[in-house]
Image 1 (cartoon, rainbow, N blue to C red):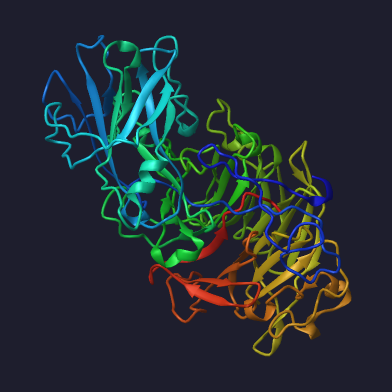
Image 2 (image 1 turned 45 degrees about the vertical axis):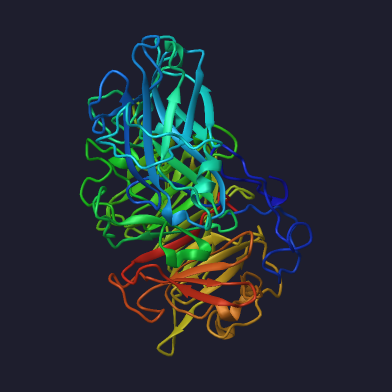
Length: 607
């Protein structure tokens, strides 16, 4: 990674997006002007929204069934769907599936795919199948071969595959179902675009699925919308028919953990969740939610991941390049830490199903994990605020496929009072961490997974009740667009840190850091020369901060009613605060009872 540049991207629907460099960036410029020497680097864009149909998402699964020429029974409660013919034309099958896409009306649809799990086939050589929009309404309990409706011409989508025969068995992966060879996709972009038009939209009556019915080579069987433990492969909710839609590509993903159980009226039960929003439409509500439950293939039969306390909504989460956990270049994972339960996980993204690594580091009374980071090679670093510790756990410790998990104790640990966040820096092979009094840098040994002696930088003190007091650091993020800078959020406010120590980057501040609390080389480390510092750094008790690498827009959260309304618990907020580099500010929320701690731009890059 020469010059500290990182070129990373996320895979969405198997397509690797181009790395975009926004105007005013790249060689000789930065998103946040003011550095003494502008950096030469490439900017990593935030990913665009991709929603999967599900019970908590804006695309809902509505109904599915299959019909046969040999009977008129109700097949809507079965766990499998059939298409084609298993007996050379004697018995013929077609299937029907329907999704509610009403909340995508008017969205710009970049791509759409119907995801299916193929668990039986008539030919390992593969054969064509088809998905076509249905022309009229149908009911899964009463539709039959005789009364099935026609399809709309001109929208036929097709795919050629076959898995599930003796010569080509389906190989399920319970901890990472998205990587199963039975997962197949059909491009249905044209139909979804037609359904979601604002005018002259095609009526949405779902899809008919079909295949050749004259011989058995085209026959296929899929899991239905009714998962069942008694049917092979169909015991996993990920394998149900799912509509995946990438949309509004110019609206980067914003995510926030919500510790308030959200009334949903269906499965899964009302529980806290990590919520995903379109950055420009937070008020519309989340388009997708994630919970570490059986529905998302996070199984815990032995009670090791949640031994004492339940999931609390996620204290920390961020997107990272998958590295050794990925199947291909561009794969991404979401690293999650939950202070209430002690759960820490590395979750495939954007599938959000299964896990690559998961371990419980101790609940709120034991460790109170506040931050997590993925390290090269698959080890995981955590910040434990209860014990004041930064620790590194081995990849083998949380590997769900390992027959002999690694030791429960960490590979390495270092004391740091009120440790709240960790951040890996590939340019210096270091782990940064922020605590109550200091920002520290630990050299990281890639071979042994151990942390070296800390280089410590005292946080500028704040003035509280007329006296100097600790700043109490809470968050640590890269300044996307300038690999020399880090964002630091604290009880005192927001500041940038220069890793190289750039003279003159401190230009004063109206609230923090104050000039009379700066000494020595602090003025070349703690920087206030970034754009719109006056408009961004206006609040105390800041719990998170970060910037969108494309637009430069910043996102922050604070606590204790700092936006004018109190929430319970007091360290959370219902508001997300956006500030442009020009100083324009928008404070928005989707629900007045939300309890957000940290909010993130979903960017798969370390710096």
